[in-house]
Image 1 (cartoon, rainbow, N blue to C red):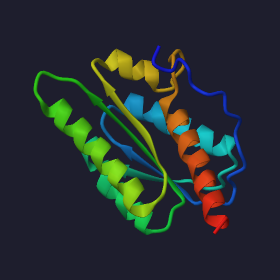
Image 2: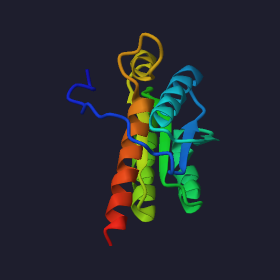
Image 3: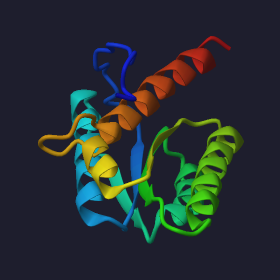
Length: 160
């Protein structure tokens, strides 16, 4: 299982953070699970009103995340899924999404939780989507990581 070795972190109070979730639209069942997981993590961390914005697909996540970052959000959670097909499209979309979301995080110095599933099959995606019977909850994990990083960055900035 790819989740082996994950830290056992407790939710922290993030009630004062402005948080946005940007989610792709492809693979509705998987996306519903990822979004629900991210929203559960926000609730567990006491985020009061995370904003949900949809993007057409995973390729478009970086540009939407950049627009949200420019609006002053403290953390962004990016959710998407790309399932391998018979063409190089998979590699191009995965690379563009990963590189673009990394650029948003670094250019704006804010955490971008990476909840983009890159799977060989739909079954693998469903197993990571946080649905009933899933082995993992990558939406929750991406949100929790972004929130913990936002708190770390706030602490660093307050030491100035």
